[in-house]
Length: 271
Image (cartoon, rainbow, N blue to C red; front, top):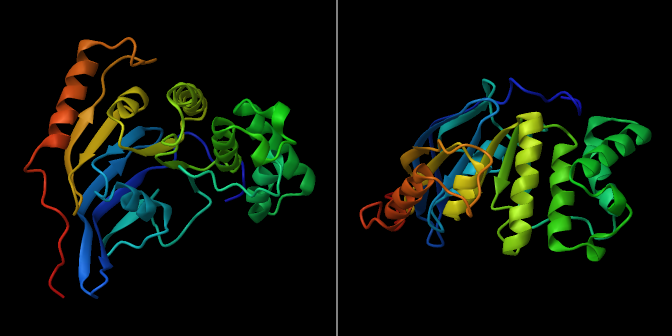
C-alpha cells in the first residue's frame, strides 16, 4: 500500500480466539492472554483498559504483527496478520525518535519504505507535522523538543503513511497532566478528520472515557475481556464537565478493576 491510500471505510479488525503464550524462565509456557474475540469496526475509537500485566499491550502487538497469536487469528480487512504492515501504524509511550534526525527527518525516514521521491517525502512529512502543530519546529532535533512535542513528532511519523489502523500503547503515559489534555484534544481532532480505526491501550479510566466510544475491560493475567462499556456521553468530553453516564461508566470500570474475582495471577500451564 502506498502512502496516502488509507481512508475512511477501511480498517476493520477482527480477533478470533486469540490467545498468547510465552515460555517462562523455567521453560514452561505462561499464558499471557486467554482466548479473546474482538471486533473493531472501521473508523471506531476503542480503548483497552486493565491492570498492569494483564496483556493489553501484548494483544495490541498481535494486531500490529509484532507478536504471533498462539491460537486463533487476527485479521485486518479480512487479511490475516502475519507480521508488521504499513496499513497498521503504532505509537508507543516511548517516542523512539532518532536523535540525529530533525523532526521532519524522523517523519521522512518512516516514508522511505513507500518508494516516494525525496520531494514527495518532504511534502508528506511537512503536511503531517503541520497537522500536529509542529511545522515551525520541523528543523528541531528531538533533544530540543519537550516531551509533548516529541510525542507529536511520533504521531506525525505514524500518520504520514495514512494507516488504516492506528494502534496506541499508552502514548501519553509519560506526559504531565496539562500536556496530556492537549494531546487528547489533538488526537481527537485528527481522528475526527481522518476516521482511522483506533485501538488505544491505557490504564487511565478517565483517559479511556474521554477518548473512546467503546471500552473493553480486561482481567488480570491471563488477560481476557470481562466487560465492554459503550460510552454514550456526547463529544467533546472533559473530566471537568461530566454527565451522569460518564460517572456511572467510571464507577462501573473502577469496580471491575478492583473485583477480586476477575482472575488469578498468571500461572504456568502444563506443557
